[in-house]
Image 1 (spheres, rainbow, N blue to C red):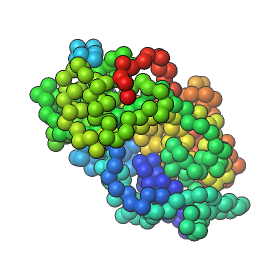
Image 2: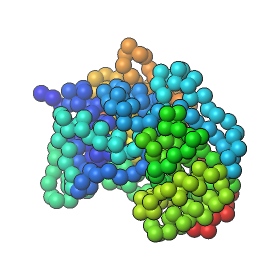
Image 3: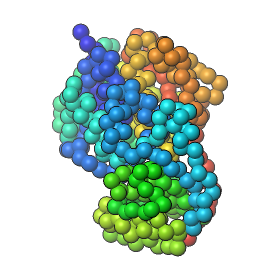
Image 4: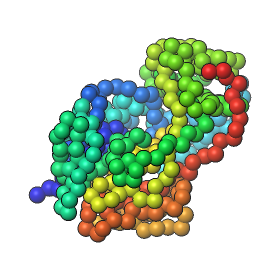
Length: 382
């Protein structure tokens, strides 16, 4: 009889875990608190490690068809002077794939379709607790129902209920900056859809990213040093962005101008203190629930996909060993151990759980080292 798992959260990490476990012959049920899994969010870059993970999940071709290849990656000053151009072609040759940019909701949709072909995904199911005995674990939902399984995977994001239940409440760590994000229709001869990619412009206390999503669409983000809790109201976000980046490189200003105000997202950017372990008994964490990262190079999503693959292989015998300064993750035996290039923050210990529990085989993926931002004040007035 197939072993069964319950996944809490139908985001990128939860759906990747479900798909990876299904590939290993598990029965999987996925539960999400949202009433509907509808399109939301902005763009996400999928670097080589993410594309390799998606390949192993069997959906990289769909992602490539729906995303935009990153052929240009420039770093510029606030007024547009080129600092450096990253060797995107050489990187693709070295790692066997280009990076791709895709709308986050489209990536979730591709994952969701692949999972629903083999398993059920339930919406409107708020997990509030779990109960565990010697042989099983049950997810408890706000509507009074329960779902029993051999393993419970908390992939419920940075505000994870499962994490709090496992390790207790703790505050978020504010990064010192907020982010505005948007998608617009905008064309610029300097950054054609055929070339793909774009640039990041840097200025005192703020930076702006500009990347092609294909089909004439641009995804942009603005990172602005600001006190926590100073987000502009929805009706003021466009004006705030234009005020912050007045006089900057023209594509920066034009992209903001071309964006519908109602579609601009605003968030305080935060992470959490790294945990020394992610699992207890038959319950484990994955993705942002385990190791929320600042949104750099798409590694929050990428590391969640890597988590999913490691977790799915673990019950088949893949283990992990401690390395010096980094955690070594078990992969397919024909490839040998894979050492992530993401640096460990803190002890970086693998999960240590009772032998024989499926969740005990999960080994910790390294944490992205939390960057320290200088206390540079932005000249914006939000």
